[in-house]
Length: 368
Image (cartoon, rainbow, N blue to C red; front, side, top):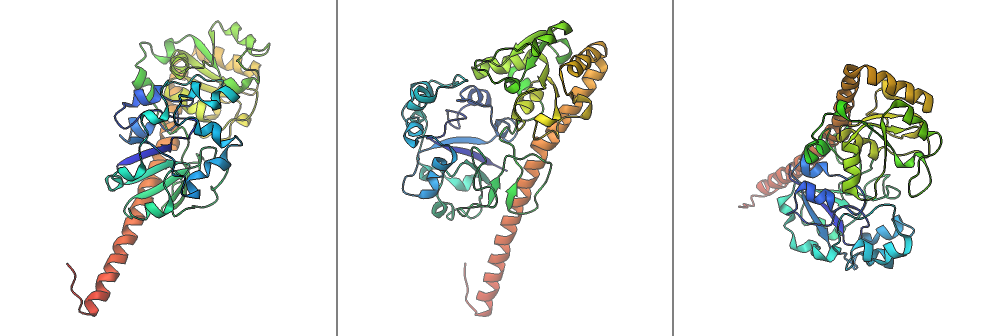
């Protein structure tokens, strides 16, 4: 199943590169997030940045996604993120991985042979509905960047809406598919960055950024109590390369307070080999977290860490369990749904062709 991931040159996240980049190069070029990097490490997908098509309204749905002046996002076309009007106006708590503008790599979507791909995943609506009809064998999918519109059903003649959910559902036909924004394998980051030490030998506790509101991140009086464990405290870094390295060096990833998160950062932590301990009430998708990894406050967190430090075999067992659960929910189920939908679409096409041929034969019309 050959997959292509595409975004427009107005999109304020993900990779700044093209299909010639290695998965690691793509990841380190990201404006902000890790995103669906597993498409490249697991599925050998191709990546494209396509130029915005102003002629079609559907290619401008991103204007409804973010409550930001569109001209700020369009400044990303010919400016690097840090040089763009967007950065100068709203700033960022993250440093972009690339110093290149989208125009360095963006191409016209009409120049790509989409027949080469079984599945095309578009961030927002990068290709108009009129054009995708020309490639009926391809499964056309879109994922709205903020998952706040067009997720109740499929729109714009696309076959699939990827809803950023992660509940372990598998779809047997076209429609809405659970597919997380951070589509990543259980050991993608470990393999990509090849840490020299095992998880059990790491000495850091990584504190998830949304434990606190303040930016840049500062450890509050509650979280500072973690020092009693004897482990080093690690926090979010603005540059994606540095942040991943912090995860790679961390034995634990913790989330016990602050706002509710979807769970993307948890997937990154597990993929980097860091055991996640968190309050399940603060995570939308807890499917990858065994109940033994649930903690509700700083005291139960410290108690759990102290226990695992004295029982390394139990730590390894939970780490392996989290990785297997991540693989099942984040990778296996979404890919199975895509394959099912692709098969269903092509089977329906074959049925239509067969019926068409039967009608022609009945009318004694010969076709080659």
